[in-house]
Image (cartoon, rainbow, N blue to C red):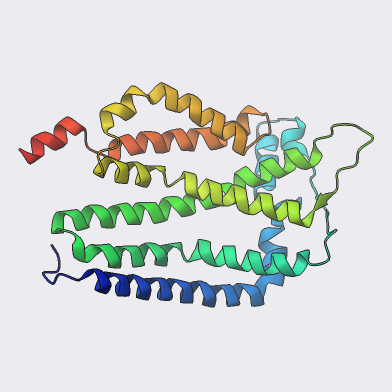
Length: 269
């Protein structure tokens, strides 16, 4: 183990308490900063997918022009105007958005604190594996968040906001509905990209192994398509592929990250 000193149960609890205090302190500081700058962040970041000049919409129009595609998917001018029907909603959303932004941006520090807490109990060879897993987990989380923000959510918003059940019904999107879907989808994408890390941890516990993942590869592909269809209910193959292909690649990465049970047993012997 990296530290020969054995801690008692109460000493472990005390260390955990210190970790929680540090993490909550970072969340609090970031939350205050985001709360103070929220009017700017709301206009330039949170509400950016509502505007026609959002970077992903510009990319779609560029692809349409280069490939001479005239479908509405590539040429659509898109604007969304939100309405507020709840008196307390602006203030509550101001606070909740600042909190969730602090949680997302503090993820690297959270992983670092997890590393500091568990590393004294690890052997040298285990430390390298855990350090690599936490680093990959941090990077993949932000890749998922960025993919959700720049591609998946704008496509979902554009489809759902323009979908009409009847020509007699005018779509008016409330502030609460927009923020709830915005946060849920982006955080879900970030969590989904943690699949390799979760799989690796389950393999350490002996719950899954490489042979099992290979055996159920086809089942996983079908399940991934279903999950992608739920996350992005737009109905078009492009949007479905934007989510499904990265998720399936993450599944394959999970297979590469863990050792087969037979190989692990032979290494021990």
